[in-house]
Length: 377
Ligand code: SAH
Image (cartoon, rainbow, N blue to C red):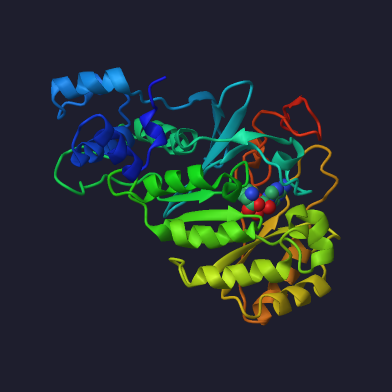
């Protein structure tokens, strides 16, 4: 099979062009055509000589994954179900806000980490997504959103004059917070994020690309070296006893090791804080003592807290903390000088809220061995 050029970041694409005897600047042209124009047809790449177009058609392909469904919620949140083959599908979610548009991107079909409150985790794990399947989510969303406003994904971007002027950016931020654990698919996620940051592709700043992890400590260090972007860590519990249960990867990388990795990461990070995500589970992790323990725990880590009201899904066994409890919890943290926001629930009428992304996963772990599809409640 011819290589799919959506699998390559700039360096890999340059290597590919060298292999077929072409100059490095061709790779830049190709990146712009693919990612800024959303063009998949070599014959339409008008500033490439015809023999090169023909050579590319013979040696390569551009193939983005297919959209299975495209749903928009009452609040404008939009969710794409994306076919990743063999009965698996993943989800991406676009969250429009007044001053930004955030795309939430998946990194794996399913997830092996089994966090107890997450519906993706309940489905088991099938496989890592390829770079093309990860960046393909941006490709699909930018094309769909641009179509809606009657523009090319980035007007003039394919011109050959260095960084091209861009139209209004529909996707201004990307969060690796969809299905899967991004640091468990390190190489493909890093290649996709490099494309997000590349001026010839999506041109986002490092501060506007956020990777969220449940806490794979050695990979946090590797990320700091390979591609430092904004870091979010799914904390969810203030002590190892509770976190061992809620986020089982904690048994391998306990809190002390995780927080030390966060501190190390900040030397490289584009932001001067780590975001700690904390899902609010009624009667489980939302008491005054949990807030006090948290304050002690993060004392040495410059951070912001993002409290996430639990989003329910069938048979989760958890309830969302009452609004008043969340308010009190936030106030305790605020009073200790921490920065705290409470995440607005978006798109829950189409099961697009955090932790509701189910997609379709043929589980390959021994946990279930079946195809699971979670229906909207
Ligand atoms: N595996 C990565 C990214 C995926 S989830 C991680 O763990 O960070 C993105 C965020 O949504 C994580 O903080 C996750 O813990 C949270 N989340 C999962 N299930 C949820 C649910 N049912 N309600 C609210 N947030 C949830």
